[in-house]
Length: 251
Image 1 (tube, rainbow, N blue to C red):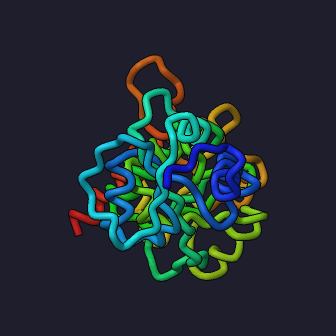
Image 2: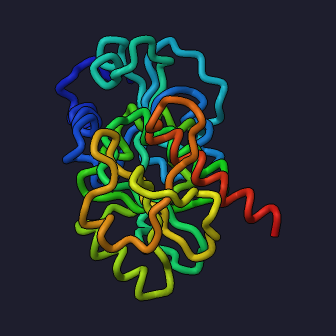
């Protein structure tokens, strides 16, 4: 049976997931590659939706699948040229911070979905499988962020905390040092040993908050030889993360 009504109860529940307040336990991924990768990564897929007439060369026999009309599918997607397939995925319940690692990234108020997606993808590429985000950071499970992650969202434990300062202080008490980027220092990111460090990336417009600056152990800056004084948040994250990677490879 092909669902043709937008008022179908299942359709209404899926449509709600376009809003952050309904994404506490589940989220939507869209497109053939994202659904296929969700299957390969053994995600907890609740439901797969396919637009009528869409040719899907994926084995979906183990999953609940519903077919919908083009009109209904357009109501569920925010993609201009959708591929005709999306999946509803239950979130991973693992939310504890892994303190056995030697490097943690924390995000303080990142707002741009593209930046967030790129950051998650960068962390994944460096083998970093968790990130701490402040409550005012953009939702990591929004459709725009998920598309930007190119599948990295399946491998990153996103830990949203109500009070980032308190979380950082707890980690400091457990042997970590907090590193922040600042233009008001002569210390280079290349002067730091990134063993047991938490690198905090700040808001695109305002940088790291004063409260976090005040509790930081090290302030560093990315050396720049040109006239530009600051970098995009995701670019800065990539540079910081790959200095950590370089140090690991040397060891």
